[in-house]
Amino acid sequence: MSDMTQRNRPESPEAEQTDPQQTRKTGMTKRGGGDPAARGRTTIADGVVEKIAGLAARDVLGVHAMGSGISRTFGAVRDRVPGSGAKSATRGVKAEVGELQTALDLEIVVDYGVSIADVARDVRENVIAAVERMTGLEVVEVNIAVSDVKLPDEEDEEPESRLQ
Image 1 (spheres, rainbow, N blue to C red):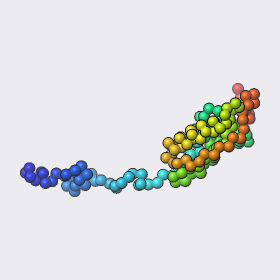
Image 2 (image 1 turned 30 degrees about the horizontal axis):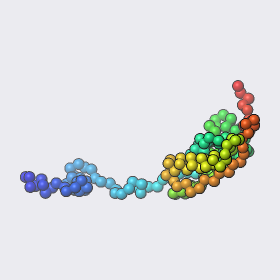
Image 3 (image 1 turned 90 degrees about the horizontal axis):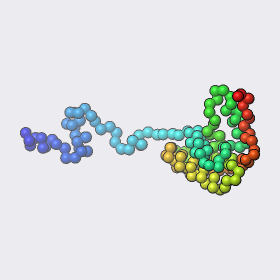
Image 4 (image 1 turned 90 degrees about the vertical axis):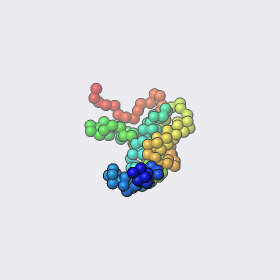
């Protein structure tokens, strides 16, 4: 009996999973081989990348707002309409998303007194890190347009709420 046991015992763990006798005993079979990532396709919408990039850009010290003056004004009015949801995270961001790569265009307003070159570098670094970490896409470029500088004594273009 010990000879029979030795002959039926698999040599390695891999052989144990594919042994027909073992499969019949446990009822388990090894399904589909290979990398699970190769078993389907994931698509990421432009809006998803735009939201991630917009939030990452707003986190940088020196970024006052996103978008041009007109888009910020219309966005502020839209944000005050009941049921319109929170402020748009995609304002000032445009993304082109492919299967493996993405390119981004950002329009920002910086605070007066900060180094625009430093803020742009920090925005670029933060956006690239966030988008690549969350989506797995390679960010091939982040173009930044500084459309305005927020002066300390300047009021925001967003209309004041009439409600108190």
